[in-house]
Amino acid sequence: MTFTKEIKPTVKLAMPIIVSQLGVSLMGISDTIMIGYYLGKVALGISGISNSVAYLIACLAVGGFHVVSPLVSKANAVKDTEEIKYLYHASLRVVLGFSVVLTLLMALACIYFEVLQQPEAVNEAAPPFMMVVALSFIPNYYFLGLKQILDGIGKPAIAMRITIVGLFFNILFNYVFINGFLFFPALGIIGAALSTLGVRIIMTLALYAAIRKNFDPRLDAIDQVRLGKLTKYIYKLTIPSGLALFFEVGAFTFTFIMMGWIGETALAAHQVSLNFISATYMISAGISYAGSIRLGEARGLKNRLLMKDVGNSTIFLITIFMLVSGALILLFDRYIISWYIHETEVIELAIRLLWIAGALTLFDGLQVAGLSLLRGLSDVNIPTAMTLVAYWLIALPLGYLLGFYFGYASMGIYVGLYAGLGASAVMVLSRFYLLLPKTAF
Image 1 (tube, rainbow, N blue to C red):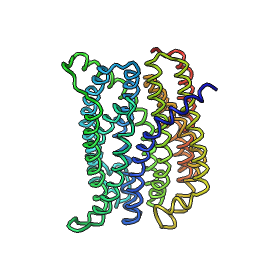
Image 2: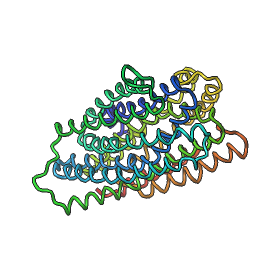
Image 3: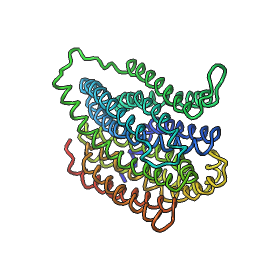
Image 4: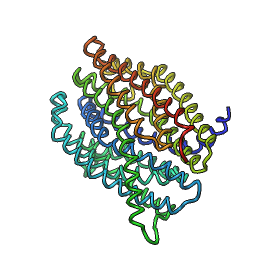
């Protein structure tokens, strides 16, 4: 078991990434708790469906950006500072392109929101809320792009500290903008969206200042041909990688739409259950991102045994974490749900959904591990096709059949969803171990 020696360095790198991921997840959790507490289940449904649709579009960039940090760590392993600088400038070009295209797509989604056939109260209030959320993703794209450089050179703690501060600002801004305070008027659900926008702007400006302090990206003379080729290469990796996350998030988003077909109670229960489960996913994602960075470093050193050990240690850590998390969810289900909402019918349904999620949460962790490790190998096309099959040919059709044809409603939708996660985990992990011996350095 030579991989055990990789557990310590992987955990050391993963911890600040995990805290950053958890901080992002806690922002979503605090939004959900405060919206549910102050505004009720209709507002909870509005924020749930709006954030889901917006993130579905945004994940085309969010999922793609993570291919950059292994490239940076590969260059950093051999002290190629010039390559890292070119990766910095190329990444910002890619971020700009995604910002323009995806914001326009979100605007179209707001205009045609009614095609989702949600309850009338949701149809009226969701589009303006979602448009503010769409604007908030622009600074978020830049934050994530800059973060890849710092993570790749082994300084993930900087983004972690900024995210923690951002979490406190998020809670403060939510309270002020939702309820009003002093000269700030009470803005209700729109106030929660404005809070997200303000916090993301602050975090991005802080990270930009930090990166200029810790890493000098300036080049004496920029080779535009080299920069253009590298930008094209990053697009070539980010687009299919983003599509992989798009197919996954799309499946989760469509479950929100199907829950809306059942009713407002199912929609709110799903939002509460999924919001908490996302925290465990974020921690698994943090471990897996650290694994992909370590894998990039091993590729830079041309050490295939180290690459295998990094993969094994990443999968081992995620397996242990998700098994413990699932057990805690099953033990403290009602206590967890009580953080969010006090409406009895929502609580009872959310508990049943959380039981399914808790029992099968290991699948979620293993599939994100496999996808991240494959990104570390710069393998993105086949994994993207695998996620399409897992979520759109298995998870959603099965969930629809169980939920509506066989009458299991929201419970059936959840079983279908986690069947897709299990299929994805098996496919991507199998590909990682088959591809590893053949990967070029």
